[in-house]
Amino acid sequence: MESNKKLTVIIKKKKKGGVGGHHGGSWKVAYADFVTAMMAFFLLMWLLSMTPQQKKEEIAYYFKHFSLFKEGSGTNPQAISTQPSSQINIEPAPPSGPATDGDLQQAEEFKEQTEKEIAERLQNLKDQVAITFIQGGIKVDIMDKVGTPMFALGSTELTADGQKLLALINENIKNTKYKVEIEGHTDAVTYSTRQYGNWELSTARASAARVALEKDGLDPNRLIRVSGYAATQPLIKENPYDPRNRRISLRLYSEETDGKARSPRSQQPQQK
Image 1 (tube, rainbow, N blue to C red):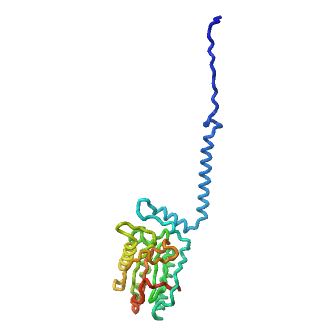
Image 2: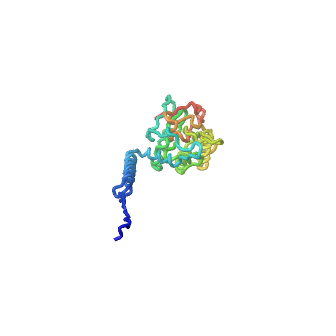
Image 3: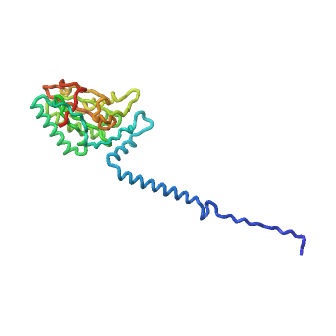
């Protein structure tokens, strides 16, 4: 035997499973993230199921049109209306209405006929038209609604729905002898650029409505005035950001009144 032979001692170190092993913790973190995401997803689905349809349309409208790169674009947070679209609170005016009994009868017939045809032919747009009596005549408001605007966003181009409503109302105007005044109105949301603001936009939209009415057969000699008021005359006074404040107003006057009864700024609609 070789007594002087050296013995080599080999020590083996057994590594226990780390974070990636069978009993590790990394998969637990991933699983926890997955469960948290699923909880958030189902919470979102529940919230959506409990949200009224109008609010869903407003949210969809916001994300469809919002842009960080376009000045004044998007929807102001206050623009969300809590009032149903079918309800319009208009300050009552002192009893006035059309000037004579004949004018009143004509106004009532126009109102009844127009509302009936809109309900029959454009049922999905009927809550976007409000017809009221004013001093010396009638006022027809054609309003925006979330999802169905009358004009393209920040534009003077009438949408298909806007064209349909104007054309139907114009059919009934042409059957009368009313003189017509056209007003453009915006809400308080600013779409302004250095060259173009709400004053220009409201005036241009009123003019676009005039062009559409004339192309559809309205006699230009029956037009009294075309004007824009920006956001100075909101229809929904308690919420100047309400989309229904974006509208075209057609003021119709009998030949006797001829639009001279009151200044538009001093007139208040009369509910009937």
